[in-house]
Length: 106
Figure (spheres, rainbow, N blue to C red):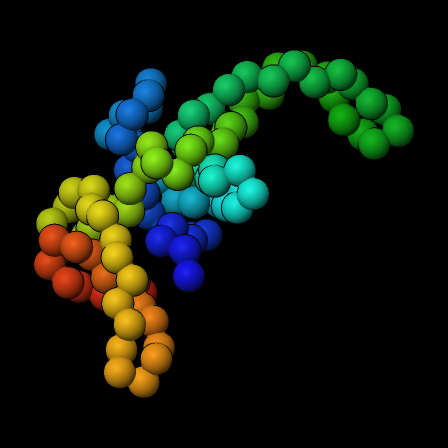
């Protein structure tokens, strides 16, 4: 079980977008990176391709950011928070915030 999943609200801890919030669009598990909405946006030059109906130009898109540079957003404390995995007696696992033991998945 991973600590950050697709659809989680996260906060950037470092970099040019420090303090910004966004939703995780996808996780790249082999590289320990995530693509977050509105964080680490870069400009990409795209060639026109008339066969695929693509117009050329400069496109702004989100680049991946390392998982160590983002943290889950805790709605109770309204801050970034660390997450731990809690194992129940029946063997099921759940993600909880370290600061107040609230469940992440509600």
